[in-house]
Length: 370
Image 1 (cartoon, rainbow, N blue to C red):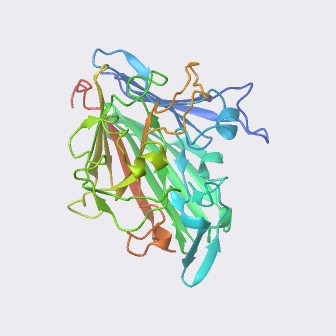
Image 2: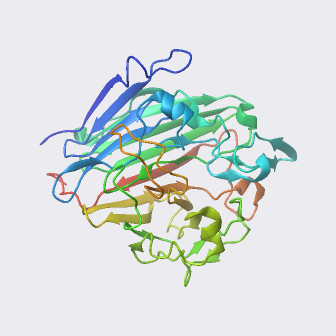
């Protein structure tokens, strides 16, 4: 039976270095059964995720860009690990332990995804991670040191994310973080998925289900209004799997302001703290590809690529049109540092931030010995 493998190579020896000349490597994790992931040292980016369709034909199902320069200058967070704080902090300001902190703003007067120089623009150090039992999985561990005051956040933060791919084709992300001073932490992964293949039209015909009966309504500039609202009877009701585009054009101020879905669903609570629970199911009828998202996080942001406009093209040269992908970002709730009623995102010295998310592909044949 083929075993998973891990290889390392330059992403592009001629072009893909940072402004200071640092070479960016590509780490390739191969399940041995058709699923392959490519991870970059820049932004800890998932550059490629190749998944066979129901007939075994492989296709990259995440949006990407050809060079590091493109990721640095043009990317709307394609495939990156986001931090220190995923989603938005209102007005870039919060108070912690009696002190107010001001962050740089980069989205309509608010701080989005850690600020203009968040973790998606950093070089992460990388090394092989542990293999699964009996060689049934391979992994790469990426680490980053964020100094005190980085993008205005208090305390130094040491972060790691480990990508693991097993022989069943499940891609798992495990995050950890430690700090020397209290600081808010909210990490997520910003893959743009199109299960028909990157650049193969829009995702409005994909079917989606979210394991939630409540979401966070937002203001016109995407800040939560306050308490969650029930999804039943609204365009946000994905309790049963249905096409993403089925109600996208409903007369809804929430959808009009965002240009589609860009909202956080509050997930059903797990039976035990930190236990993995299913968050969402995504399927593409034409290819037969199906994906499940499992996580330890309390929320999932669903974003339907509302800002894509055909000006970006991937490594295969296909342009990414409006609604050309959907992001399923497992995370804590937006603006939590200013919302004491939301689950806390404060990490304190001596504690360890831990979070896990899995992308599972149940349409794939079961690997031998599974």
